Image (cartoon, rainbow, N blue to C red):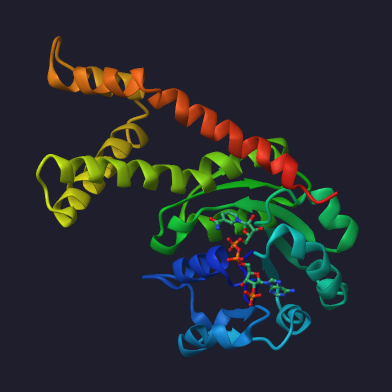
Length: 268
Ligand SMILES: NC(=O)c1ccc[n+]([C@@H]2O[C@H](COP(=O)([O-])OP(=O)(O)OC[C@H]3O[C@@H](n4cnc5c(N)ncnc54)[C@H](OP(=O)(O)O)[C@@H]3O)[C@@H](O)[C@H]2O)c1
């Protein structure tokens, strides 16, 4: 199964990064995409890239065999009601990136689709997303096609739907946590003598290398840290000072605060 016509409803931050990634080097032809958002004027750049622009969500979905929903949670149910008649009589896969919107609810509103939830992140724009997927009720061909599509913009992992809130925090919010870490490291670098450009370059490449040491080998972070920390050395002095100031604890508490906020923000 391969998707021939892909409707993306809600081309904002996330929808835009996904389309950018899918159109990237060696990617899909722009003609396969039809895009929709409320402020159609903001889709000009995509129209110039060759994507189709729909005047309405219904129109976007009329010929689509894949619908990607990337609107905010409070907008999602209204949009699903709008598109339901357009997908009623055809085989359509619907991938929702919407935080907190459960597959049961999607299938109540649009009963004829095969529904999959996807939690990518904005690094999809450069083919480096971590996308968690859930879709227990979807067919194998639909799951394989969705996996291939998101595999084109990074790594994928199938998880149980119950873990989707956790995936939202670790994978999607995680980009912001990592970038704040990077900014702080850059600021430290400036204080000890680098220009801001040099500090950012050194910090970003160091962060990329450190992440790859773990991602590419499966090694535990602490095993890699042991290789850098000499007894009475400079690294352990800095690390322990950070820990005395609550470094790991602040990160863990932040992850948990984001997780708790999902429940508080869930539409009732
Ligand atoms: N940002 C992330 O890193 C990230 C990661 C994973 C998942 N998500 C999920 O992805 C979804 C979108 O997040 P976002 O950050 O991309 O939000 P966003 O930038 O606000 O984008 C939302 C988009 O939805 C469009 N929209 C709103 N109502 C619409 C309607 N009735 N019909 C068609 N389009 C409509 C908006 O268009 P107008 O601006 O023209 O109104 C906008 O383009 C959320 O549910 C979020 O939970 C986000």
